[in-house]
Length: 485
Image (tube, rainbow, N blue to C red; front, side):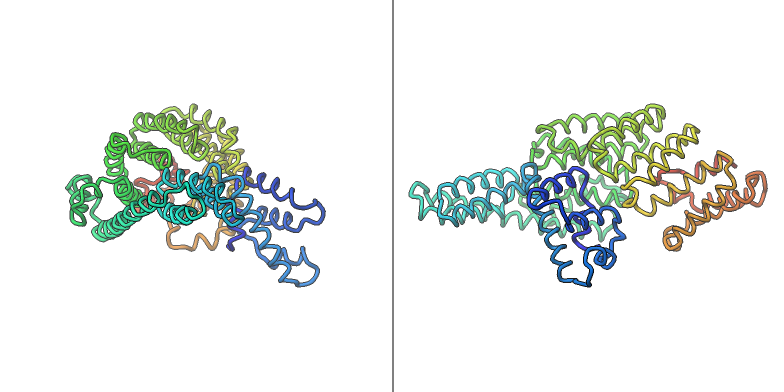
């Protein structure tokens, strides 16, 4: 996938609308090759190929004109993103102020330049962008030659202090790099008999005796990211929960959280809620979901849209276990939420989850309706192949329960044909073998009553029993199979 395609496919409906508004300002509506190319890439997705659209846009094989078109489109998208996003993205806002300052300095308006450098300084300090601060202080020191009111000594001291801080942050990065390497090498974080906080403290003491540096937010957040990702990758949810809750409390007590890292706070709460769910502590999970929601309202709902789907999804997965009807009601309400509608990927998953829940309630027709809606949704194209196969298997289970045996046989052949390449991958053996069992059932629906099939099904369940531990699959076809035996 080239850069232009990647840029276009990651855009949600809101960003697409902003781009269309932006580009309509600069040109007429006739023969808009850039708009055609943009819409074409959105439509075909990852299957986009230059050669196919080149023939439609240019009568000759004028590749130079085509590449100029692509570059112009990329440039317009970039400008649109910056124009509409810089006010809500702190890093972009820093560079916006700094860029304006450079511009006004270049046209010999030093006082206006100073104003914007100071705005950039204020925002850069707020989000701890010390690298940009170094540039800003250097430029203000230069401006002191043109504006007598500027005391260069003040900004020279600020630059010196800032560079000392940058050096300390380099130490932090060194500590975290070695720290991560040691943890990955030892592979004993979850299995160690020593409690994780004590283990981490011992490791940290090996690299530095600077107490201030050890307790700095940068170091503590860095350790949190490393440990959390390692535990998540290993699906060590018990250890993850035991680590995250006290870490969240310590960070709160030490006032580590602020506006610039609010997104990390929300992410931590979402991980706690999900880890609690995986431990089947549904009430604890729901408790932290509500804490998450309260924090989403902070700073004038700064990251509300980003986490709205995760908040509702946490509630859905918990209620799917303790109150399925409530889960269905939540999912239906999610299909009407603007931020979810604008994210094609999340919307497709919401429709898939409705299929799952209706199957659990044995409302088979409704389950098929929502699976088909998911299949036809734009966001389904970007869903992982593993999830697609699981969704297909879920559909086969529903078709079997609806006694649609002829269609079941046809659908299995279709799935095997469409996913042939993916099903040949080594990590998909479990799914392929289940499809083989379903193929047998399509040919002989009474298979569950016959000893050979029952034996094959039991062997399958025994073979992959450990694989289902901590498995977070859409359709639990192992449970479906167990219940039929």
